Amino acid sequence: MTTTASTAPGSGTPDLVAPIIETAGLTKTYTGTDFRAVDGLDLQVNPGEVFGLLGPNGAGKTTTVGVLTTRVVPSDGRASIAGIDVVEHPSLVKQMIGVVSQQNTLDRQLTPWENLYWHGRLFGMGAKDSRQTADDLLERFQLTRFARASVYALSGGMAQRLMVARAVFHRPAVLFLDEPTSGLDPQGRLALWDLLGGLNEEGQTILLTTHYMEEADRLCDRVAIMDHGRVLALGSPEELKRSVGADTVVTVRAPGDVEQLAAVFQQHLEGVTRIRTTVDGVELHVRGADRLVPRVVEAAESSGFSLADISVTQPSLETVFIGLTGKELRD
Image (cartoon, rainbow, N blue to C red; front, side, top):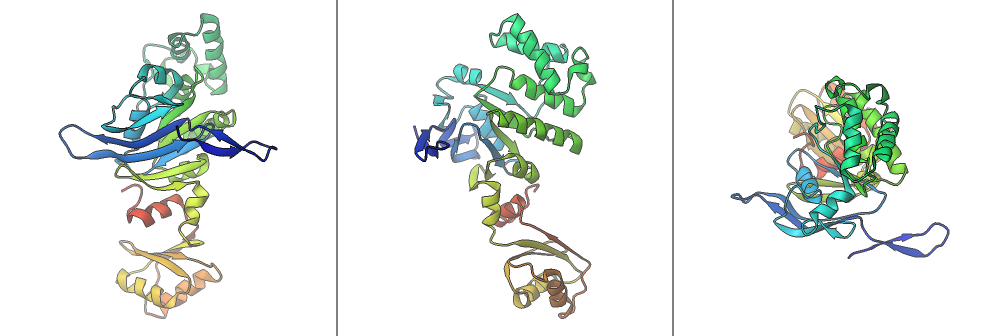
């Protein structure tokens, strides 16, 4: 098995740590088609890491998680959890993982407390321990007052928190989250982010898929940007954003020929590293932010363009993705 080197605190000597998730040449082609949902994927996730698969719908993120959680059989390659092959020993792998899917999988016939209690019993916990753990998790996930309510009474955010509580009930080695905040309002999304951060601080390894760049940026230690079943870029959010080679992203909207406007900026604006035209304007990647807005305005107006709008931001993970693929994450 491949290992990664880390340094033990205070020792100054490398300590070999095996990846807790590993794939090699992982491929999934669906029967009757030549479509590769996952195409030769090589990944290594370290223990205690929050690892994100970021990409648009159809990039292969959910299929990858399906293989790692034993729900999807790969066509080629291999995948393992803590050194255990997911195809050869699926039952053993299932005992080591917790999964929160995109769909609400709570038992509608049980209360929130019962959903947790019987999950513990299913994983071999005694009745006393299962009762105590259910109580503790409901309190931690701020669901105690709904313990005996109908699952139908839970909001989307509360139902998602309950599914996460159930997934970590048996203390899995890896927690898988597939689009965990899809459909949640901003308040529910922030609440779930805080809970996941707390779990990770206690050592929980988390692999999540998302198409929300801010989610990956806030939660993940490392991110793999995917499209068409392949990894296009891999690194920490900061490393990926630095790879853009620009300090600032300027979006300019103006009536007229956007291709001509782009040519104006290319010729007259110093520090431009990349230009992308949009439907009604131009996106500029610029190195050096000194007097940037006045310089943009001057370059446009001196060439006869009247700007309708200008916005200035820092490079984001979506900036990285657009640079790699030419399309936006939501496309």
